[in-house]
Image (cartoon, rainbow, N blue to C red; front, side, top):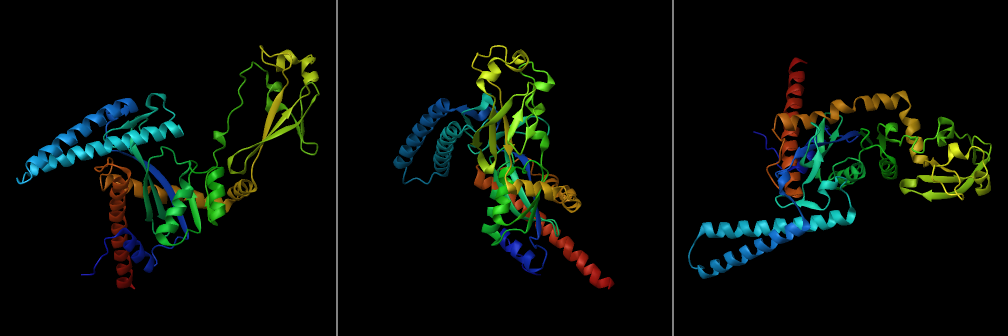
Length: 381
């Protein structure tokens, strides 16, 4: 019987040696898997600190009892001491997680701001496919397109995929020694940061740019359509806008945004807006006399423009059209065949290992299937 390596990296090395993993093109996709923690385990920092002090007192009491019975082999007492230490450690981690969340202000759910789970501090409340919110991990899979084999697994605590593409490329290079030539991901990953990161790494990125994410201009001030910013004609040669009253809005400032996106601000002369006969239709009702109309224009970096031009081609569209059948199948397999809809382990490192072993089972099953088809092909040749 042929020996099979049990380490995931060894398995990938074996698959690569057989030409089954090429990294010519990979897909990136994430899915939410429920954490081993309940929603009622989330507490604020003050409550966690109270529980932490109680847990530390319990550890001190059990340690003192252990010293008194040092000569007695008492497994149950040792197990209680170990469980108390683990609980104190989890609560300490939960307090640190709350402090980190308060500092970074990552959560957008007001009812969960500044809370962490005393059971699994790394777990975050995320929205699942059914529309509910439960403590979960966002499991990211990097899949080689050649034969649909998973080449990288990571359980993240970020509920959205917005920042995951660059991290996935870095993990791929760290584990496999090189980056893929092409990467395909859906609209959740497609943004200025991802496009720039892929270009900087020399990786050809294919994704779906979500124009629907652009903010829709709303008539918040009661303006009619001709007074919305989108109705102001722009003169690229003179770099200015013209308002319905014929006044020129000249360039005022540039706001430097992240990832090379520049926002240009244009303003009208103060005197023109103060005496404008159309002021009542353009200015907010409570506008001060010194108010003047201003609008903005965004300028995208060259990498983003090149990406959008590429994705408009038929070749790029065909490449992206094959994404779902490759990227989503491993997630469905580990949930259905391995039953991995909720993790049994706690904390991000152990959860990542549990997901890795599930993907290892998937890769070996795929390998057996490919070998069987290859042997059948040789037999009928």
